[in-house]
Amino acid sequence: MTVVVGAVSDLGRVRTNNEDNYVVLVAPDLPAGLDAVLVVADGMGGAQAGEVASGLVVERFTGSFGPDAGPQRIEAGLDLGPVLVRIIQEANDDVFNAALRDPRLHGMGTTVVAAAIAGDRLYLGYVGDSRAYLIDDANIYQLNRDHSWVAEEVRAGRLTKAEAQHHPRRNVLTRAVGVVSGVEVETQTFDLGAGDHLLMCTDGLTNLVSESELLQVLRDGDDPIRAAQKLIQTANDRGSPDNVTVVIARYLDRVKAPDRSRETETLPGLPAPRGR
Image (cartoon, rainbow, N blue to C red; front, side, top):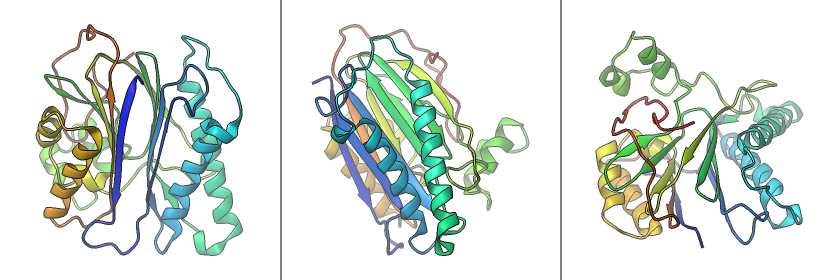
């Protein structure tokens, strides 16, 4: 087993329904050549529409990679970025068309961050402000960019990161799955080293728990499920006005870790400099 995974999703302290969804698929229940497919989605739209949107994303990934997808093989060295883009765009169609058919679902959408691990390569596809971090024995790297209004203002130099953390528009997305008939998906690819942790989460965690705290919990050496539980408990202890979902994968293979920049970003973050 190359990857050990733990995942937890929680209502938080205020919400009465959970609009987050996630899926964890690991070998051997995957096409040959894949070690793990991990997806986190944070739905929006009110009532139960948000959980419908995020659920449709999870269903699309399960149908594409899960046991019911039938026997498949991923060629060694295949760039999985375009595969993630295609699946997310298909999920976008699923959500958008479901809202057209049912007026009660009008306006629903969801974020998504999806990871595929094949050997020592990590492929990410993402839309919205759910995040992926890589934690090694020295540092934490935010791997994806937030598609949010405050993130774009910070990147343009019109807001500081500190201002963005408390801005009244900090939850306004500039891109989401299912809101319009097409969506632009960003992708990144990274090297993995032995002992690396991949942390994927909704903003219910990152709005309340700092990167330094994420790093500390992952460096404490707990197994992934225990670490995920600790992080959610920290968010809940601080009031958790939103749902909180955490997926943590520990990569076990490869003796020598790749060279990495020690730079790191906080809110809103940029892809780690070592990505390709």
